[in-house]
Length: 595
Image 1 (cartoon, rainbow, N blue to C red):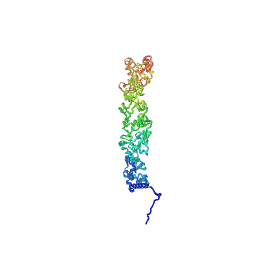
Image 2: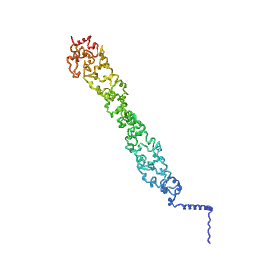
Image 3: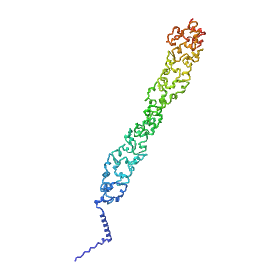
């Protein structure tokens, strides 16, 4: 009979029943968990990464790629377990490709590869964007401009004056990725700027040349310490193109201190030279228009203020383009101001007498008529008892106000000047007073005097300036001479009679001594006919004739026999004004008659 073998466990290997049960239970749990796992081939489609990475999709803006599944971008991640996930390729985070090529699988690569590319693109898209979700638009890591300040110096965007476009975000002007234009601008300047700024203000008739250089030639596009985003304050900016020396000469226009734009539009205008208004209306914004619109207006004003003035600075006073009268000579004939005799006022400048702009008087004079001249000339010399009628016609009736080839600025030489009013025929008869050849002012003051007929002094004292007074003040003086009645016998200018007498010799005497012809006398006779007198026939309207021997003065060659042959008509030391020494009337005869 077969015997059954009985196997018995080695006592050393025996375990309690409870331990066995625990081990079997653990194996059962593991088997169950493994049964729940998806097969490896289906893991990418079935695992929800957000079970662990839920925070990546909780922000306001979620990357659309998340809806396509994480493995759309992370194909290089291994199985879910172990954690951390195993990377099955050589790209960080198990990305399907390096940035930005990975992003180009959805985003148009052409938008990132234009002529000008943002340097940040080469740093990877996640330098600026969160690849999963963000509270900022366009998945930006931060709001603009704070995001941009992570690379760009914030101080350049936060100075005193900030471009309003900064508050709209950098992408208001710049493309964030790439553009065909410089500096990532969305359009070429100035067209980009015209999207906010009115283009019509930059395209009028006269356009600032700087516009062609771009707005940033003058303006910083972000911020500056100057107003209006100017790259430099005041006129210094303008001096970068405009010659500073033309604006900093001795005399500087006050408007320069107000800035160039006080007169000029910096962009464009309908007027020349970028002026804000047509001249002279522009100038009237500071200068009193009333001073330029009086009755008489300087013709130069019609050419504009800059016909005479530099609008910026000059070496001359009052911003004049040239010193003194030289400026005026650009229009006025210099020859008329530089003749032999020049009015002293010319040296004081034309504006000593003339207003350069406008006046209520003729010829732009600063005062009416003679009143202007009295500012330099002593008025009392023109307002004495007897005033020359010509003064009522104005000083320029006789004088040129600028220069003349004649003394005292006279319009013509004496006596021709005087003949313009006075009858020349009265000064050019056969016998002319020598003083006439010396000029009228030898005897007359041309302006005013206390003496009649504008005489420099009373007659006969005036006559004594040329005639020897001793001949008129001897022992016996002819009464008319003593009374200063020279003009009772003589004409002061010219005559057709000897010694510029009013009439022929002797006839002039008979006007007072008519009794001589009625009683015994040398000319009327003492018993027979009187002494023949040398009275020219033309004295009564006839023509001059040659004196006969009997009509000549035997003692004074070439002179006619007349009362003056025996008598001195002025004064004498002899009785009866005898010309020669005589103690009795008959003594005078022996000077001619020898007996």
